[in-house]
Length: 154
Ligand code: DQA
Image (cartoon, rainbow, N blue to C red):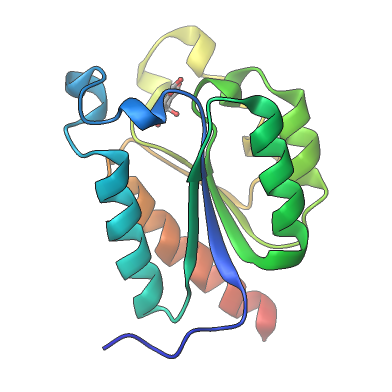
């Protein structure tokens, strides 16, 4: 049974092209859609007592705005910045300004792919990183962020 909801939500932010999950390179990213991942993530977060704010944008600035919003509204944040992972100093800086736990997540094992995916601007400002477990990466990320939130509250 779901626990009573806590005051602040877990923000789950998704970057460019992740709206195409299910049909985009299914051999790399699987056949689960982003909407399915949203539902799975919300259910897992509920089991820890958290609501989820689940969003996707193809625009860097919009992701930055949501991270700013998360400063006040989020208990923790899970972010798959897609290709912006490898390019965005703006997202790096916005995350730096957060005080809640941050978990970076990727469906694919970025380290087993092209060299340009090996560097992340998110990792240095994340509490931890989960890569390569497909849609299950998001569920592992919810468990991780929930335990970091609990630890911080002790
Ligand atoms: C991704 C990995 C990135 O390199 C890529 O640009 C994506 C998806 C992943 O979840 O595996 O869009 O973040």
